[in-house]
Length: 162
Image (tube, rainbow, N blue to C red):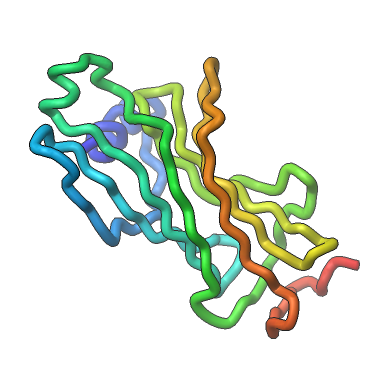
């Protein structure tokens, strides 16, 4: 429900909603208030053969009525990424900041759930960091997953960085 509401709000605010990059693969009810844990599969758009599974908490309508704060979900996120096929790395950002590979709203406007990918060249490893981003009062809640490339048959579309 939250994604539907946020998608409609985003479409109204910005003209069109971006296509979804995540596929919901699980939903676990945690209480009678309608609160759920959502599990989504996210394919890395820059790297074939890598899938991340992200879980997060989605507040139900009764919880929203009881506690107010209608337009926001908690910042808690967990992530696990794995090789799910042959790995082909297309053009990716190799800087220390890496790049954002997934983003979705967890409040009406200001708070986003984000997954960043960083390539650790020294250890030949892909690092995925899930966190929330806010305009103010940023959260220290984060989760990380890695995929070691050492010893794997990896195809670099533009050649492996030296």
